[in-house]
Structure formats: C-alpha cells, structure tokens
Length: 365
Image (cartoon, rainbow, N blue to C red; front, side):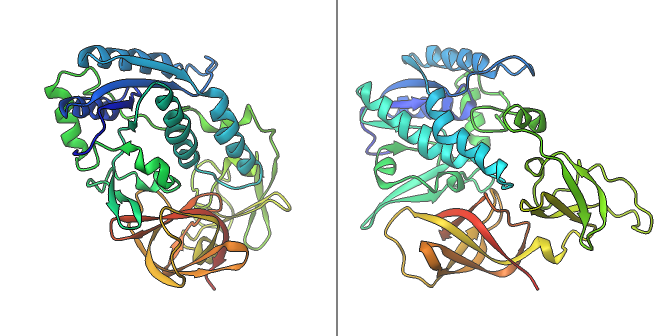
C-alpha cells in the first residue's frame, strides 16, 4: 500500500471488512481515523435497528485500534440521491440496483467531501477492488478474490473519486481478511456479512417496498394470454423469478414450476412460462442508457467482457454505438434474465471500463 497519504479517513461500517481496512492502514503508518455513516432513518416496525449495533461495533473497533471515530448522518442525501431513484424505477416496473448509486453518490462523494472537511487527503473503504495508475488516469481493477470482487458496484466512480481512495483489501481473499481480524482480536472477526438493500439491510422486501409505493394489482398470464392469477404489483417481481407467484397447479400444465418471463407496465401484466429458458427470458443483446466510462471513452465497436449481474462470470460481448449516446451490448451467447434497471458492466481483463443501466432488451428469436 505504498503512497498512502498520512491523513486518511476509513469508512467504518461496523463490519469485518472495514475493520481490517483500518487495521492495515494503521500498520502502514497512516494517520488513520474512522467515520461511521448513518444513511437511513430507521424505525422498529419490523425489528430492524441494525445501525445502533453497527455503530457500537465500529466504536469498539476504533477503541481497539486506538483511532478516533467520527459519525455523520447522510440520510437526507441518501433519500434524495439514491432512494428516490430506487422507488421511481420500481414504480416504472424495472428492477434497480441501489448499491451502485449508493457507492458513487454516498460512499465516494458525500463521504469524500465530509472527510476532506475533517482534514483528510484520502479515504479508504473495505471494498474488494484495486486501483492502478496508468497513462490515461486511474484504472479500477477487480479484487483478487473472484468470490468477493466488488468492482461491479464501483463502475460509476469518476477519476477524482478514484484518485482519492484506497482499497486495502483489494489484494486479499475473504478468508485472509477474517484471519487478520481474528489475529488482531477485533470484535468483528466473526460478524456475519451484511446483506440486503445498501444501508437499509435485509428486510421482508415486499412489505418494505409497500410502505412507499401503492399496490397495483394486475393479471398473471401465460404466453398464450390465458389468465392464471393476480399479482400484487409488478414492482414485487423480477425476470426469471420462480418463487412467490402464487399460481399453484394448473390443469394440463404439468408439475413444472412457473417463471416470470416478461413484465408489461403498459397493461400491468406479468407473463409467466414453465420453460426456464423461454425465448422471452433470453436476450441476444441489450441497450445501455447513459453509459459511464471510468477512463477515456473507447472507440466503438469493440470486443470486451461484460457482467449483467453481480458475481456473474465474464461474458464475451461486442459493444456498438447506439442512438442517443447509448451502447448496444451484443452477447456472444444469449443471456438469461437480462433485466431492465440492472447494470451492464464492461471489462478488459481485470480492468473495469465502466457500464450503464440496462434499458432495452433484444430477445432471442
């Protein structure tokens, strides 16, 4: 971790990853302090008060490492920059991924600005990713651990953000991080990883979403148009979904499960089929809106790799320019359940080139 500035603020979330990031930065001789970000004003309707527990764990780690811990509330920024978009996308029948905006707008923008106000030159987080200085700027690289690589969620960072951040865990595996935490006796060494919506956590998703968006029931139909049941709202379903449809057995339909193969906001219809690779679920290409490039905009067409969901193996693609500044992503192999609202992220080897929101699907014949 050469070149780390002396004054660095680590985002201490109360988890093991950020704890070990702070541990390593301190060992490297940095002037380290921690910052705990609260980004959601919780209530206890469903028993989720994770922020208080996480703050207590972050404070315990800070005491163990003998570093100061600052706290800040970014709930207003999170609501305005991330959660309103999350709700708007669901209301439109799409399936957003809030973690991407959470990173670009909160963890690496609001946090960075606040840390500089505290006198820091750099920030650090517990993300599994790496950076490298090149002639064209700062490149974002995948983390060494393929099971934990988080570059997918960081693809909207800009050069200013990348130039100010350190990822101490980028060259480590999760097992190594756990081992370091236990060796140092950190209270978070065996703490379970957080899951669920960024900064909100794991909740009964349908109940949580229904607090903010009105129910909009409609028909569940098969691909021939026959009505099989009713759905509570398209926002509660995603392409490829198998469970929670409430269809049950159907005469002449056999015992095979049903899958969501299409969402039609125009007439509020959820289309299902019993073929897990139905043509409506298979895309030969997608169009990406408002692509973000981490470095210079590449010359298209070009060959590269792509992920259309986190932890998906790299898929060979050809990128072409499309109208209105979009990018057409043509898959070498048809992809199952490409989902509008999710992100297509592009790679050359370990280098993350950027990505954008999947807006339009090109279905297989």
